[in-house]
Structures are given as structure tokens and as C-alpha cells.
Length: 76
Image (cartoon, rainbow, N blue to C red; front, side, top):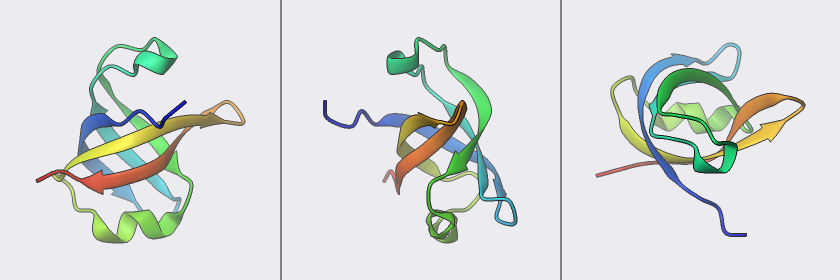
């Protein structure tokens, strides 16, 4: 299956722990409503290009029972 991007807004960046708080649209593949939640990032370098308030789109995944950002990019 192709990666399914979800629109979101960056609310908090925790570079020390490799975590990102996103206010996101519904995550259809996980049957979750739109909400604000914390994700781990698969690569901490992803956080370098982001700032609080950025509109982004990302690919969520689940690893070891935790939600993870697999890919992320800024939206125009």
C-alpha cells in the first residue's frame, strides 16, 4: 500500500527525546479521530527542518506499540 499522508500542524518539538506534538487530521488507517498527540520520529534529523506552527503532512506508523512519524514534509 502507498504511504498515506495526513495533514497536521506542529505544536511542540522535543529534540532531546526525538518527539513531535502534532495537531492532525483523522488517521484513517488507525481509525482515529482528528486530535493533538505526541509522536516519536523515526529519524531525529527530521526535526531540524521544523518549527512550531509549521503546516506539515506526514506518514504515521506504529512501532512497538507507539505512534511514529515515518516521513514528514512542510506544506506550502
